[in-house]
Length: 242
Image (cartoon, rainbow, N blue to C red; front, side, top):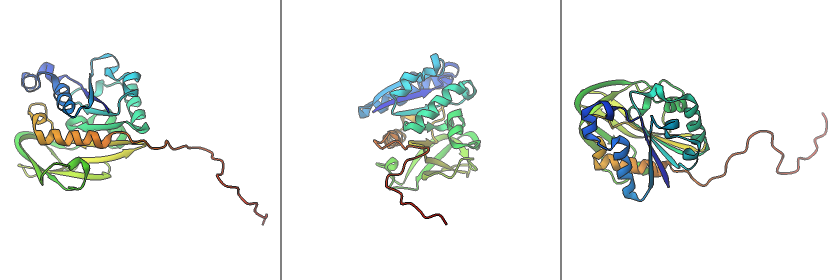
């Protein structure tokens, strides 16, 4: 399986806390633990040519992992169109944390994807509400994070096909933190944790969820639907004119 981890890679260059947390970038940290499962992992960032999302790269990508925050508007629309096309063709997409506001996620959802937020070093408890789902494999009843950014409802997304995690925050809010969707032949998993000033992506349980999500989202070997005018498969009997 070929996985591409995309990160805008801006906070790492401007915020010393983020640079200390993720010396190889958030993309580097995620790629590192995904490689533990013998997955073929590459990375791409915003400032590369075509944001690192060339036709050739996208064509060979089975699952795209996306992290963005402060530079959503800098992602070129024609690149977003290409990513959407690949998702509809069957490429998996795992959207992390503030990627909820990325152009590609909003395009695939068709809504604002807006929410409440607060940075206050709050405890987050992610409850597993679908323990039978493959993305929850290997987890207990919940994941507890000592400090994270709060995201709160209402989260302006379509009703998920499947809801796997609901977060509770120390300040009282709740949030749909693990949602799946299908668009065309592609599968999409949104997973909430991962604010850049915390070391969330070093948490073994968070890593397990992302690994599970990548494996769940990988393409399946299914037939591509054919659309448009269709010839009958069987002979249609002649009908008497009435």
